[in-house]
Image 1: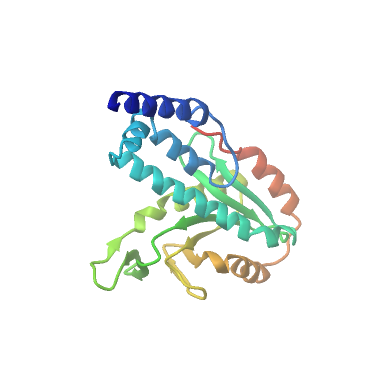
Image 2: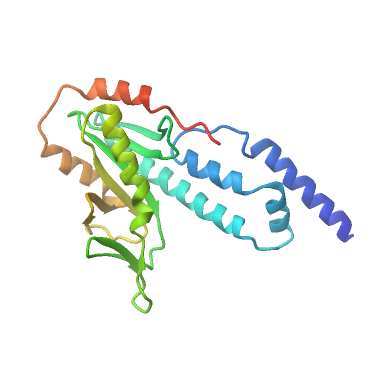
Length: 230
């Protein structure tokens, strides 16, 4: 009986990998994070999970899945701005680089924002000290997570080079920040996901109107192609 169970689990794991694994291309919000989760779930990892064996690869895959869900959540929240003329390009590849852009925003006034949705543990609050970002619970030692936003900084520099504009970098936090909270460090802004529409509207209203929105949207769509999976 145990042999049959093992065989069945192995066949199911291979079947999932064959039809939904790394070879399948996906695009849109959360594409790269979802692809990474699929890549981690090899047939062997899925077999171990089916047998109740915990692996680091499965734990990492769940983290990537949570990140993909966070990106899809933020993209959904931004649809009100789409009706106001904003353009959003989700999960864009940077040619020649391993870094991707989670979400690029172009306002009707012709300004660019690089958004990095993050879905983090709500019980571990964020704090900026000495130009570094930390998180933790009141009863535990703070963890330095500054480098976790390194991708946003690199992506923002790439967008500046490719589009010839100076974008604003915003980490959109799902979980650890309450509505109304704002943090800033190293040129990055951190805002709660529920406030992102209000933040973008308020920020953009302070800028001069330009006539470059359509040109920027076309250029960005061309030079930053959709992420196409592994």
